[in-house]
Image 1 (tube, rainbow over the protein chains, first blue to last red):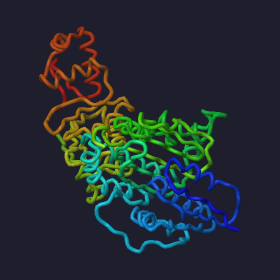
Image 2 (cartoon, rainbow over the protein chains, first blue to last red; image 1 turned 90 degrees about the vertical axis):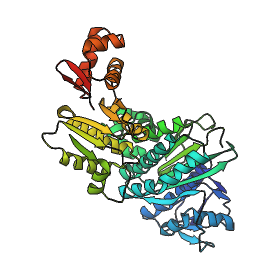
Image 3 (cartoon, one colour; image 1 turned 120 degrees about the vertical axis):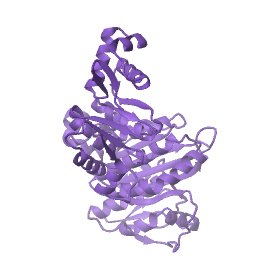
Image 4 (cartoon, each protein chain N blue to C red; image 1 turned 180 degrees about the vertical axis):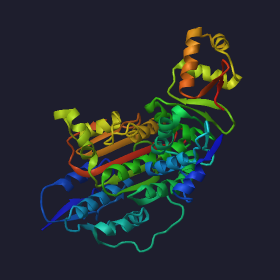
Length: 298
Length: 173
């Protein structure tokens, strides 16, 4: 018996809950992630798909199947983004995987990269900082000050995996022109893991304080708004607050999904909701950060 | 005065291949390296950020936050070569712990970073720009009452960002 989980044709943060709903649906047996009709996947979609495969594999389930996009250009993009290289660990791949990947100038700032320990965070930040600086200032028209904060936000987001997830995760960074919503270029950071999530991470220290209200949404509120951490060290819990400050300064968007809730810092150009609760459950934590071009640069 | 180059400490304690101060683990290692370099008789430690490209808040907390919490009552710390990116990481850490520290940028300009009442911040700015001064002079120049000026200087001395010698107050430099 095989259970099919549909990968949306346009797979990004907007359609992620549709994917999660299919993922969370009842039914035993081997899971088939069906991406054959996929036309577009954002970095957020791709790292989320890896996390789904990781959750099943690490949970002791049978290795899931994944049908690759039939569209050759889409499959090439998935390869160029680094997805296929990592997917082989978790999925039995079906369909035609591109053999070679063209290198060189690309809108992929950071291929999908595994984050397991502090060394990985150093490598990610070290790899991307110079190129990110160039894109943030030249293409997005942001002040030089945006560059340092970008590296800091990227580092703190990756460290959430190292410090709290209890397993490894993934990060990807990409720049593209977001015609549909903004008509401007954006840099997108997507981070995902299949770990314990915010609620379990904070349960021991925070659940009692919230009482009946304790939930995925309450855990996100505690971490993002109140800056609490599972560690008693008073210096902890600043990372997400720092990411919020950075994105607020540059009119960016931050969305953190964990379990059944998603909390979003909504910039003026977006129409997302600040808190979405009772979503289909999904393992771990998924973080989306979007830095838009300066309005007159785009 | 002991001068500590953070890039050197990073290379010695973590890896010579890294140019950025990121992650708590790195921050802990660098702080331990700094603590090993602090000689008993050094009243002031100068920490040089000039060769460090990027620092995140976790590292800022481990290095500067915890150094000031552990050693601040017994020692003066001066941060040099600090740029705006470093400040972005340092400020939330200092405010969270109610700490203050003197930072010097690459042009040599001094500023105090962190959590301070406004009269104390004004008084520090005056001392940094004009050199050593008596409390009455500071009160007059900044249009503060003598009591407020004395409280401000007392706060700056307690935070170890200003020294008092023979009745004159001087910004740490």
